[in-house]
Image (cartoon, rainbow, N blue to C red; front, side, top):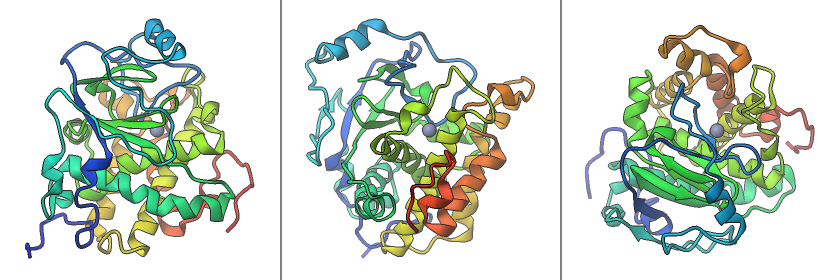
Length: 315
Ligand SMILES: [Zn+2]
């Protein structure tokens, strides 16, 4: 038995060894990201001032013509078969240790990824009448090549609908604290669960409504992001109810809220020295993001997350 680790969230040995279901790679450092925008857009958890390069047309073309270079097999959308790939010396062997999922940020992300299946595989059919299919997760260091282009760690976590994969470099959690967010366990899990929320939207067929080129507080982009925050709240609700997580403490909840607020567009605009301009928002304000997470967390209902006013959910 090991003692109670501060910040422990996963119950018992839940998620131990979850690193095996996650792909890993370590890319070259430096260089800006070049995630494809537009059709097949990647959805990062926040849009910071700079750091977003142009579309890498070549990569998009490579995608269209069946694969990216580098010898790696493109992870195709699949029905639950995870290919474990490890490139560049980064692997998750340490996630096999007892308690690793409560100790290391990358193992925690992998455990969160695993728990997404246990939750959404029944929530989605029950509440939306849709069949769930498993996404992929890819933890990387420095930079990564994806179905949506090349991205550096500066991008923050993102979901690429083309390969149905969530990408995360856990160094993001340091970035987050610089923005005033928390790196507490539930706050980290929220980030992973948010990206998985985009996968749910991809299954729902609504993800393509997001268009960062048409921003604004009433935009579809903001509605999609707030819904993903709300879906992350649903994840937390069920993770607790299904005994995946230890009971969520007030402190953990506050840390998740603190993080949702930190990545609000108004906070990011303020911190990058600009004026608060709601017409440029893509993800929603601090207030909206934290409220969206709480709506999902308190209700566990997709109907409470219906920012697109579709009216299709069953309670
Ligand atoms: Zn997002």
